[in-house]
Picture 1 (cartoon, rainbow, N blue to C red):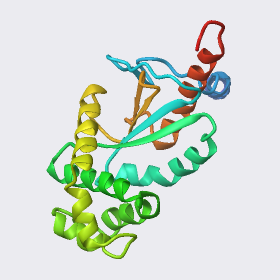
Picture 2: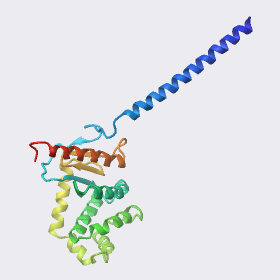
Picture 3: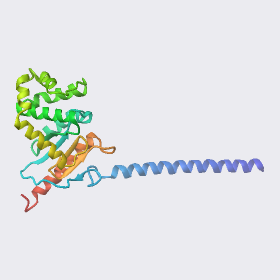
Picture 4: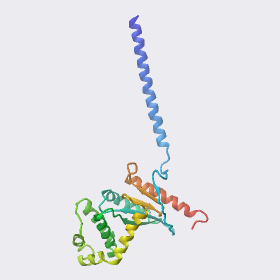
Length: 232
């Protein structure tokens, strides 16, 4: 009799274990369905992007996308190749602008270098190599002399670089970039500002690839507004 009861108890335990396993499988299956059924690209204000406190009113057919970056930022470097592809893909609808961030003195020097190469018309040809020099080769550019020496023979001369670096025009646009950073309350890089209205930045939940997905979403939202009756 005792053996019979023991067998019954064993069967009951096995049945319970099987039942729990089945429930677990069902839960996992349902969870998978719920996750995959969430619409992709549905991004929320306050979660995936923020409103700019003092938005700029921009006109024109294209949507302005501004990247705040620094040559001193490894995340900006890692984004740069994908960003170049994104810029080319969206050139028909996006007006893309880079704005160097200035969180410390070394980044201020790099920002002024960016506007120096802009003034000399060599940014496009030197930008990837300069990024690589800093982030991969770990070269430090903490003075005008080091920068001028590096750029000598790369579409300019050391003397031309120094003249452009110290020019009133370069200093003026450098100051304007500093003001933009404060206006948009940029506290980390890379940060993207879409049409002067929305700020998108990377964090624990938003990686570099998703950053561009959110920018895509906001660009499409802004383009849709332009097509509505009564909108210029």
